[in-house]
Length: 340
Image (cartoon, rainbow, N blue to C red; front, side, top):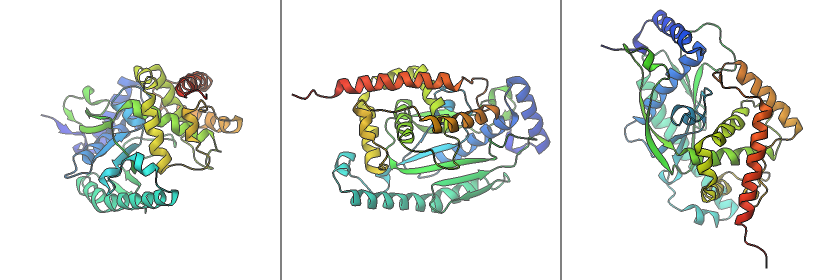
């Protein structure tokens, strides 16, 4: 008969993590956080009457699609904007004025705020009350933190002792599929029960194009002051390029156009220049100053043990993305009707 990991005494949890470290070579703090990520996902997607939402981002690429081997510690959740009181298609939203779109964005953010504060937070507090967790949420309801009791000793400060759940409500969740995930070490301990989560997951091909456009937007401006943890996006995209997912995505420029259409409506800033992504002007390579910041952040991520033995020189990643940039620009230029 199995006993839940969360019902084990603290000392036995500590011993289990040490055994898992010896068998996998992974840092115990990374193993521990993965266990908590799965528990939080389980409670999010088993929430009664939950809105249509999807799990996406780096953690989905590692936990569901096995595209990346790095440990992705945060949970990125998109609530379909059509669940939040707006049933207009993106094409119609694109014809609205900038002021109308800005007002809609604020309305959707308000709906996310109400949902996370009034529904998600109480649900997680109820489900996790016996686990010694502390759950907090920011004022706008877009970031929820599950701080958990750690059974490990010293940890690299890059690896935070909380699960961050980021919510957004200005996107769609198609295409998607349902997958079941569990802790990476669950199979090592047949007498211990770990949380399983049945999650709706955004298709990896859409995540590919969301990463491409995110990096393009970031390369057109200075990196935000004091904000690290950006190098993971370049790493993830390089791993996607090496995977069949990347090849499938590159054959679907219509999906890129769809991603850009949504970002033009809800996320455009003066420097974004998303239209260049479909006109041969995509940029995936940061300037010299931003590249130095990227290198520093990448080294910190590597030193924290988050790449799980799958580290590659950043120069190699940049070279691969330079080739990708050229390929996408060539493809997009071929789609542009000639001027006659």
